[in-house]
Image (cartoon, rainbow over the protein chains, first blue to last red):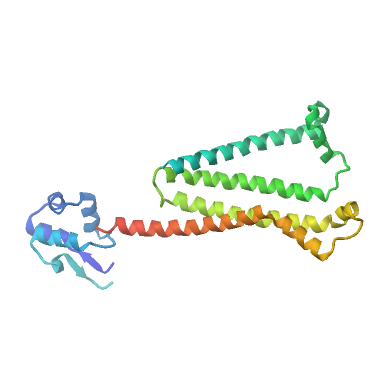
Length: 68
Length: 186
């Protein structure tokens, strides 16, 4: 998929662990793992909003379009 | 849930009932073929099938009935297999989709095969039956009505149910894709 999720990079930048983020935004670590691995088919605005709020960043910091 | 459990029980009763009936019929068949004298009096009339006076043409109808029955057992077996996941609330599993498709296809095959055999049988022993009944060949309308009765409303209904199951299978397959997409939406 040409949309890449750069959640790992943002987590490292903010020094936050996946489990911690999952707890803050209220999703399971399994779902967060799906999101990080790029297996997710879609992302809710509410999830994006929660991630941006928790990591204090913009959606563009997390999502990136890369041509195949 | 009660509906699914009831359906499961009914399918199980039907399936095992048919298995028992087939085994008993097979035993009766073997007995009639090899030891007709050892059977109780009530079963003796069935011996007419093997006494040489039974017109071979009528075997076509018997064969179509037996074939239809055996295929029906197999189709009910597939239906039985797709009930378990439904009971476990796994509505969109491959088991349900595949077995519904198999059952639907078998219902359609049963209808087509038995109907064709019956129609062939009708033509084959047309002379035979008419010589017995009226002494002349059937007219066009009589023949058409015989064909219609050979198809029969039960077969027609089975064909509809078969097609319905195929549609159901497609619906479940679409449901599975939607569920997958929903599960992967975070």
